[in-house]
Length: 103
Image (cartoon, rainbow, N blue to C red; front, side, top):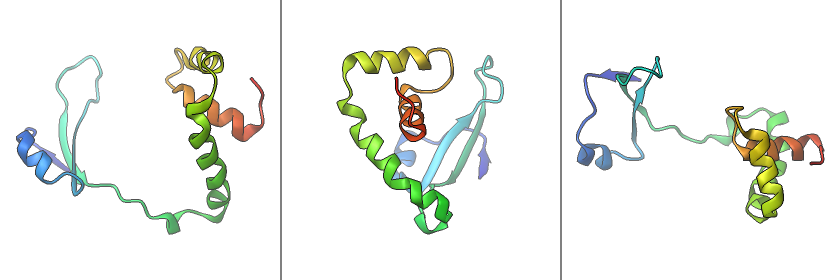
C-alpha cells in the first residue's frame, strides 16, 4: 500500500484497472477528507485456505447461487433482520443456512 497526495485522473485509474486498486480511506466518517491510497489488486489464491475452510466452500457456493431465487416475502424478512445491524440481508441468509436455522 502507498499513500498518494490525490487521486490520479480517471483515465489513469481505468488504464491500470485489475493491476492497481485506488481508494480513499476515511478514518473519521464525519470528515469528507480521507487518505488516498493505492495497493496491488487483490488476488484470489485458493490453496492458501486451510482445509477446514475448503470443506465449507461448496455450502457457501450453493447458498449464494440460490439467493436470487428466494421468495420476496422471505427476502423482506432477511432485510428486516439486517436493518440497523451493519450487515447485509445475504449475510443473514448465509448464516441461517450454514447454522441450520429456519426463518
